[in-house]
Image (cartoon, rainbow, N blue to C red; front, top):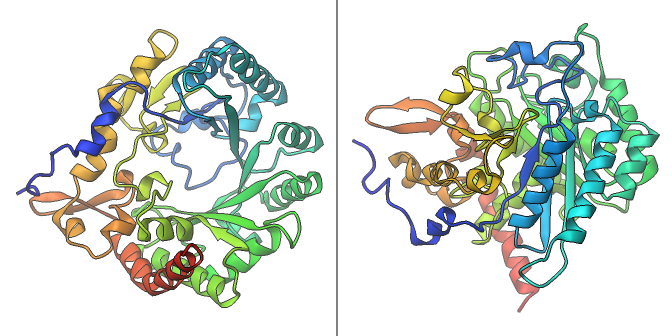
Length: 409
């Protein structure tokens, strides 16, 4: 029996079926193409041909222009966010991004903003760091790009599953890219997968990232940790291992007095949810679906985690359509993407609904709900890890929230 009332629509979610809802756009200028061959890459299992070496296609200027103009036009907000992703987006070449920035400024100059103010463009880009040089740093610095660098930890952890096509280490190239960003004063954060090579080494990984993760000791560090959920693969982290990893990171963070100096995304989101505010990370929000994904060829999907399915594109329930031939507004405000976001909450199993930490976890990412239950919706694979972590940090969240509230009374 499915949970009673699981398919009901909350009144505060009805706006998702109306045009005008703010959204961010993730763009993949070269699709899945990459200069690395990471074992855990989520593009690999279903479509390995996408990772082939050699010549590849780059998003056309016509498609790029349409996506940028429409995104800026439809977002009736002071800020409009573009997230450049991949594969490895830097393979598109620096000229592509120079043109993207030029188009953004052109769109800003032409658009008549309904809400009556100016708009700020926010560009973020996720890269493995191996292609970064002075020219890239100049572009990032001059145009205020926030750069996310994928690095899993010290060399032995990073090299365990992140190598090039020849199986060679790329750690030094990544570290060189980070050094260049620091030299140029480019704002960046680190994104680290948590996999089997990471398990049991949370404190050490945290210390390593803290050491490399800022331009100077006066500037804060920003870290993200992404669990690799692949139960049948040698690199997939265990639920318990992930929970312990994050507890060890938190313990080291707390022991060092790093609050306000080092920002770990999961800690910030947990605190915001604990205090009843918007956490800002889709997987820990009650509903999701605010970041549609535009692929190199114009295909648009509801979420980055669901672009690569074994079925054909037209049969993929997460496929919205193609920007080359369809109306962008109809795609991003499709009932299909609204339903996708709301089903995150409406398909919570009873165990989640009764959990003491539902307000912190919100069931996690729908992609990870793979553990079958009798007569109920699937449970998140990471559930035991989340429960362990959130129960561990809750007393600390209480201390932090009281300190914050006392400063505003």
